[in-house]
Length: 247
Ligand SMILES: [Zn+2]
Image 1: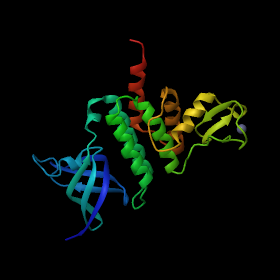
Image 2: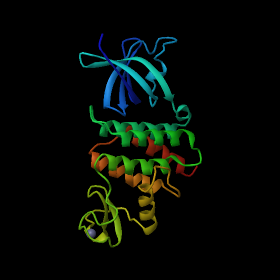
Image 3: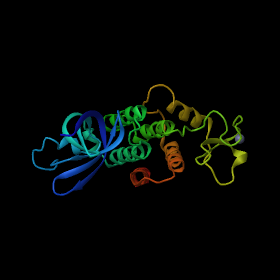
Image 4: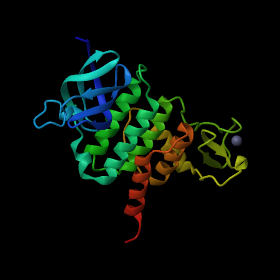
């Protein structure tokens, strides 16, 4: 018998292996990232079927043997089912999971990021009143803050002074004065600045107003700071472009 432990976790990724088994990449609130095998999860009427679905969140009872985890039982909390019915929302959810997977490390709990991901998935799944970009913009900015890359918004990321004629420089880490611009950078108006700051103020919630443009800028910030692209994020942006294209 291996050692048992119970964690609260979200499924960030699934990989099938053999006929019915699934390897889960879990974001656990208590232990950070870990992989666990859900044996027989794809067998008909398997008690682990729900435990092995992407974005599924709940209590995982894990057994550890020789440093490897397997799921013994599972108490579901939320499956975010409506995400499966909307390609755009689903692609944002997958982007959130990929970004969280990049940030969280094994044995390094990040409960703030965990709670943020749960809330962001809930808004994407259940809050039809807000566009996905209005959820994604605050998610991106806050996730980066929890990753140690909080965007600089109150002073210039280049000269450290008061911002004059603002631009957003993803590589510099936030808002800069126009005079530092050595390549074309997006203009940040006073209204944009207010929206960016609102995203980081108070408890996490979708931001109000038209968020698409700033969401694109924030996604560029995530890519620049984490130094990689995310295929689900590219898909989400393609679907946004199609949604807004004239028909
Ligand atoms: Zn400056």
